[in-house]
Image (tube, rainbow, N blue to C red; front, side, top):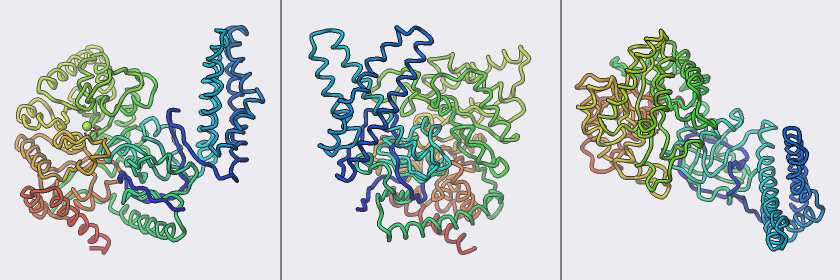
Length: 583
Ligand code: PEP
Ligand code: MG
């Protein structure tokens, strides 16, 4: 029966495909009650998993015997004995049959029973077998889950990714060619999983409570990224309706692509620079540098998060260089490592914090760990030769932090010059404005930097005291709050008065409902996920500056977020309708 699940819209568009569970850890095990007709298939799934787990352990045993000795390799024999014990297999199948449960649950139940038996033994070596049982259970669970997703990956079938969260490491893992949609149980519109989904241009719905328990792997789903809804096992009529909508959207996108190559300027000819946000140099293969003004935000930490250890200086140089070459002389803004908060580095142990987003994150980590920062800045400088690279500092809180970073930059520049290493001696240094207090003292900041970029994702969370990742209060996280609008106005005014370039690189820069309002507030440079660029350019080309300023003046007088939102929607929709009607 069709099931309608509500979540939060994270990336627009419609996807229709089977949903496949992906989860990196085994702490989450899907629970499912079987229909009696499914028992035989589930038991055979178990049998296959036992065979595969035995093969994997045998291979491990062989490797250990070669590298150490056969004696050492015998530690695996106990595990093989359990897996090959017919009684173990029979118990597992019986558990599936009697409890009508899925294979994963049967493994957990039977393993728990075996463990108890071993733990109660008098003999110490036998008691230790309990650990082997636990390990065997883990191996079986891993195989069962791997198999499930590999069915889709190996056969090149379209699928919808489903997991507790969509992590940067998943972006490297999934088969992108067939990834049609993303559904997660956690996260918010502005969390990094959602940002990644938008970067990939994949419809996504996040914060769908308990989705992994409620929708079994393999079920066909509709991901309605526009309304934040997931429909599992849709009926024929619903499918037809969504297929029609998807076709209409594809047609609108096709027409939008005509806008791609047109100049980004208002009807009276005011230039608005449109740049892209990227999380990986890999993203650049899908974007033509000739139709954008460069990269406004390269989130370098994502490349660090996809790995198992820190990239070396040489590896970083190669990665940054790839972006510089792609840009063909256009701006490339590299943000220095912004880890911590909701972006942990698996190999950088940071202490548990009660309020991680207010904690040891971004520039704070880099300034405490000079080696890390020094290596990255040196790699950026070495990659900068012959291009237009800019360095952007995240989470700047004080003027003093900028001075300390500038001192590091100067020192590296001197070293490279002395060593005759090519680099751009005029590389620009900028600060992200995402900590509200920095915006308040912007007059003191501007003389120290070459440019500023407003990170509205964090700025909004700090201004409103609303966690950008918390689905429970997601409706309170609104960049349309008049307090935010006034703040943005103030930042643009101060930067424009001082003649310092100012851009917005938070998600609102890619929201075409916001475009006219942002132009009216004084912004002329916006950086966004590439998918949003045509729509935003369309808005730039639709509204004259005088009209944008009228919209901004009304928003600045508004008393509520809903008023500002209604105003922005009205103009966004009007611009879109004008385009569709050929105006
Ligand atoms: C922001 O905070 O607006 C921003 C662009 O950075 P991130 O989303 O990576 O925190
Ligand atoms: Mg930020």
